[in-house]
Amino acid sequence: MKKKLVLLTLSALLLFSGCGSASGKNNQSNSASPAENGYATDGLYFADEAYDEDYMYEENTADTASGTTSKENVRDGRKLIRTADLSVETLEFDKLLSYVKDRTNELGGYVENMNVNNGSGYDTYYSSQTSGYRRDRSASLTLRIPKSKLDAFLGDVAENSNITSRSEQERDVTTSYVDLESHKKVLLTEQERLMTYLEQAESIEEMMTIESRLSDIRYQLESMESQLRTYDSQIEYSTVSLYISEVVELTPVETKEQTTWERISEGFLRSLRNVGRGFKEFFIGFVVALPYLLVTVLIVGALFGIIYAIVKKSNAKHAKKMAERQAAYYQNMQAQQNGPQNKQ
Image 1 (cartoon, rainbow, N blue to C red):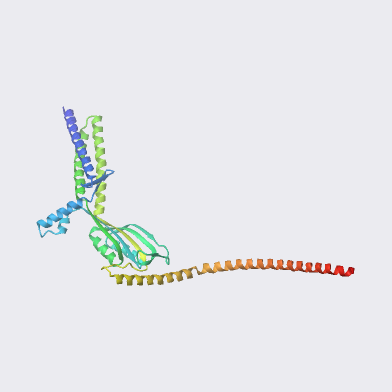
Image 2 (cartoon, one colour):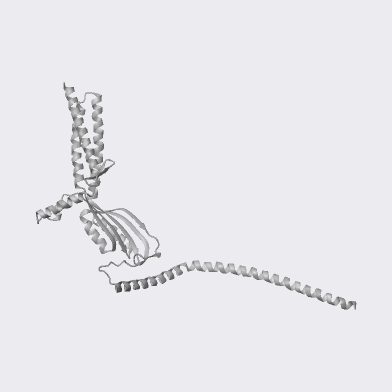
């Protein structure tokens, strides 16, 4: 009787688990739609930006319902992932790069990835899209900054460089995060029950059935815990993608629309500056290449000297032969003229 009761209970539990699993899969399928909760891949759940609309709706509703409710209060408890992308210019590349790394450490963040292109200390190139001549040194960094310090960090970078482009994104993953935690609790409860039934199992078949389900639960729990840890990292540490380029002149920031004459005068002055820099770069390049030019001149001069000597020697031999031929010709002619006279 006890065995039948265990089998019936186990069958009911597995049936319930199957339904729960199907429901979970349906939730994952629904999460794949951008219009709903997000998307899932490889067993991991990812929230979509569709949550931002719900969040904005809730925020507007809260502000309308109570004039004392601030946006910060509405944001409390939300799971928000913030990212920022910046492209900046600097006249002092090494100084800015060192400042960014030091400031990141001071704020409790860290450099996740960094690529630096040192190029050459004197090489420049012309860019008609910006301010003219630019250096070829640059750096690309991926920084992780504590969420509470992100605005301060962005302000510090703006004060110490010239920002050419900036974008910020904020993704609300609250719904997906809560769903993962709820599903995790359900699976943990089911795991505890199955462990109890495993101790009471009286046959190999029962044990294999329970072990199979436990293995599936462990896999799902590991996937969920991994995704929750990823969310926690992305939420607590905002991601900043920073691109630094060294320039000779900073790109001007237009604060107002310029008139036609202002554009003409500014363009003319920029052209004069670029022409001056062009002569400067030409002079620098000429001086730098002077040793190569001297060696080239010496080699070319030596070649011309050798060729000239060969040609001169050849011409001298040719002239000598011509003189000998002419002398022989004259002697022959004179001999012919003297011959008839002797006969007479």
